[in-house]
Structures are given as structure tokens and as C-alpha cells.
Amino acid sequence: MTWRERLETTKVESTIHISMQDVDVSRIHFASIFSFIDRNEIQLFHKLGISLSNMLANGFALPVISAHCEYKKPFGLDDVVTVTSYVTDIGTTSIRIKHVTQGADGTVLTDAYTVHVSINENENSPITIEELFQGMGL
Image 1 (cartoon, helix red, strand yellow):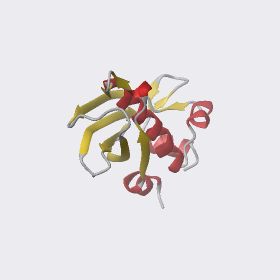
Image 2 (cartoon, rainbow, N blue to C red):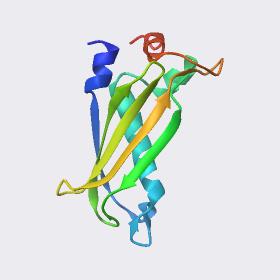
Image 3 (cartoon, rainbow, N blue to C red):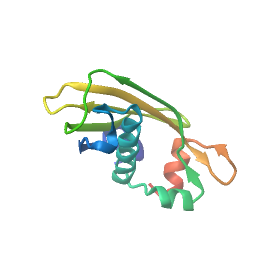
Image 4 (cartoon, rainbow, N blue to C red):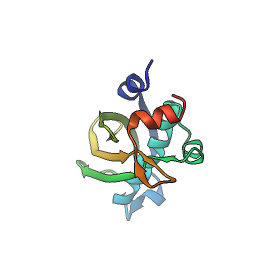
């Protein structure tokens, strides 16, 4: 399977039990979603064969250049949610990752995305997604 096919088909789901550290009084704190997304992205990259520490050691990075989240339904303390993440768009130098949080009944609670740009960390310059994956031996 090519790197592009893997990007187009790989999906990660995480189950999260909402705890006190995730809420503001009793409802989800807006920043908690981005913490969930960050953890899911690490799992997604790992599933794609990319260790972030190895990527950085090889002089590459995929920093977030845009992040957006719509909070569709309230949820909070003691809820169990599932966060699903997958790549929706592959550009020349960037990828867009969609993140959907669902309640136990399947209701969409948040709809979010992040956009990452591939860069040569040593030169602080953009590179193509293909160059990134080839540079990582994928």
C-alpha cells in the first residue's frame, strides 16, 4: 500500500471517559477537545508508521497551522465519548485531519479539523507530503 493510500484509509478511534480535568464546572472545557485531538493524531501518525520523535530526529515536522472545532451538543463529567480521526484532504504540502467526537448513543458532540504542513525542520521551509513520507522511508 502506498503512503497516499494509507493516508486515505487509516482511521483511529479512542474512547475517553470525561474526568474532572476535562471540565469547567460540569461541562467539557473547550480546550480539552484539542487535547483529545492531539492524542488521537499521535495514534494516527503511529498507525501510519510515523513516530513523531523519529520524524523530528530526521529533520521533519508536521506542525498544526489551523485548528477548528464546532461544539454541537453539550457533554461533560462522567460521559464516555469516542473521538475518531482520519485524513480528509491531502495537499501538496499539507494534510487536513477530521476529528469527530460522539456520545455513547452515536450523537455527534464536536466536529473539528486540524491542518498540518510538512516542513524541513532544519531549514524551516515547506516540503511536499511526498518528500516527508519518502524521507521517513514510507
